Image (cartoon, rainbow, N blue to C red; front, side, top):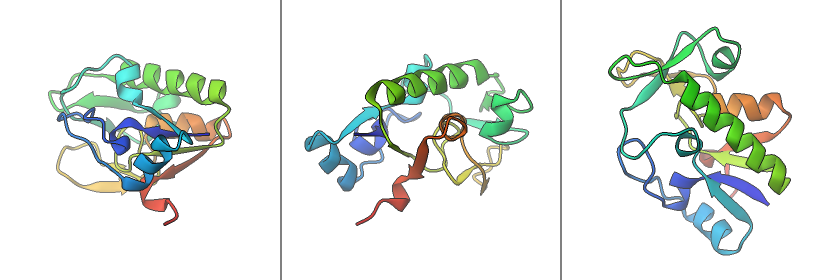
Length: 149
């Protein structure tokens, strides 16, 4: 069993009410080989919501209290991102999932890139909050871009 980002499974849960449908993920869900989760919704957000970015570092820095997640209006939403990450970890452990496939570039789910925290559309190397927590706990996290054909 693997866990996947809900938006990749076609659910309209992204900040702007859209999805990021990935046909490989849809196939995994249909074949009951994957379970979809959205860390941001698990943390208490609703859809739609203001976009958010990590300010002052990456997901690991957020876990250590060295960086924050802020929305486009400057509101600190770090606690909601942390709550969603820990709830996702609980689900992954309960399912005994060995792999988690998350949406690249997200402040929650990015596995190799996130936005730079200045809301200018610029990406930088780094992991989102949920990815950082899962990896810190020894769970393999990959991007949808890394799925084998």
